[in-house]
Length: 100
Image 1 (tube, rainbow, N blue to C red):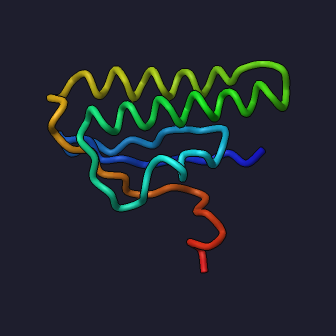
Image 2: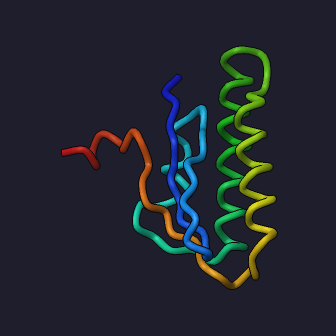
């Protein structure tokens, strides 16, 4: 199962790398896109839950690292107003069609 990181810039300029055990993040976030904090936190939570469920389906247990990433995103997001913005800077690895 391919792992990935997604890198975001929070409203205060802080840049964070977040882990996902699955490329499913590409289904919910776009590189270069800007989302409100509220929208980003919701999208990330849904995607990380799906990633964890993919791990459960394959290995029989949920991914604790995915849950930790989701909690970190939620806690960091709570530091800002819901309407402030988060930018997705990178997603590694990119989807195959993005790399050509």
